[in-house]
Image (cartoon, rainbow, N blue to C red; front, top):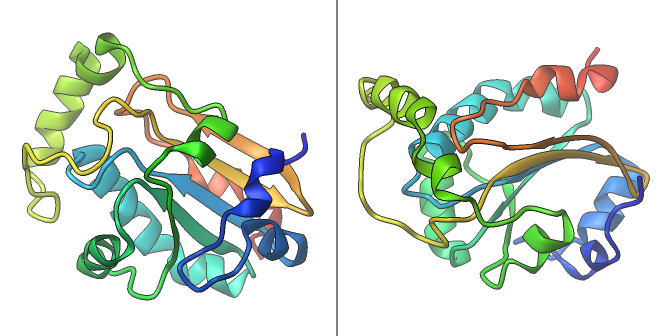
Length: 174
């Protein structure tokens, strides 16, 4: 499936077009909900653990968030992702282009989410906060892009869903 046409309009914090990057190397495009979200913090830790392996395989990681770039940098630094590529999409245009919608109450606060959230709170690397930076109803998603094509997609059904990142990029891992 082709990347949405609006993708070419978005540039990373370093001024590079997402489409230009994915035409030369595979991209793991990770859409976050908001920086106060426990599951987004878990995603940041998961990606930080894989960053070196993905970089060695030529996979570029790009985060999409609804925050200002400076605040995003602080969060990325806190989770071991200093210098990671990211795109600020406060208006959620890119989220919409990739079909990521606002969640229903059951997707955000369902029993499965509450149980997983309670488990995460015990992890000292994932501090609990009620602070919401961005749209707290926005659903996350993960996409693998290459040559202006979407090769893999993971659209969360519940905010607590945990993508299998390695499986998504397996064809590029050495």
